[in-house]
Structure formats: C-alpha cells, structure tokens
Image (tube, rainbow, N blue to C red; front, side, top):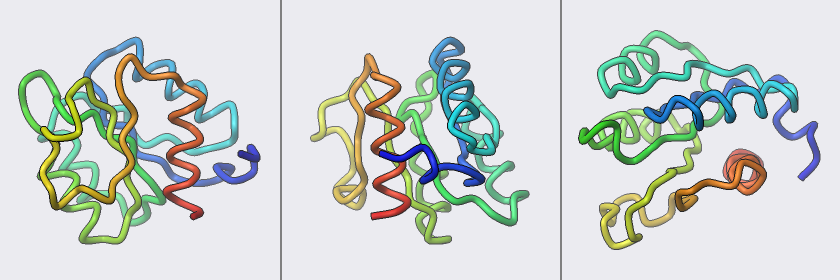
Length: 123
C-alpha cells in the first residue's frame, strides 16, 4: 500500500485499548492521515460520527468494554463510510449484515490494519 493512499484522509479510530489506539493514531498520522478520535466508548463514537461532516474511513473495535460497536458501524455504513473491524471474536460472532466488512483479528498487526483500511477506502 502506498502511503499516499491515506494521506489527508479523515480516519475515525474507535478503540478502547489505550496502547492499540495510541499506536494506531501514531501510525495513521505517520502516513499523513487525519485521525478522528481515538474514542473508546460507544456514546462518544456516535457523538463524533454525528458531529463530523467528513469521515473517509473508520477502524472500529467490535467490543468496547463489553459494549458492541455495531450501532456506530450502522451509522457509518448509512453514510457510505468504509469501515474495518478489529476484534478478538471469531467471524461468526459478527452480525451477518457486516459480512462484507474487513476484519483484523487481535492481536492486531498495525501494518495489516493500515493495509485493510486503505483497501476498504480505495478498493
């Protein structure tokens, strides 16, 4: 993946594990992305989605401290925003309506996640 593919893209990060959220934020910024968040709770994610006029892509942890991120995912999909889930869950635990959404298993390799969000956003 070329670093240019994420340059100036507004990428929402919804992740409740501080270290992963921080690493992801730093790596996205290093390739020129504009990071929205990170946020680690569902209510904050929904508020940020509603407040932001432009979101080009999103990385969503499927489970935010026991709360499922799917309401935020639904809002993003309604807006046509490409998303990638990070999860420790098996694929069968993800609702079928998200079957086309890319998934990165935890523990996440940051480079693989950057490639996944780049592919989701740019085909």
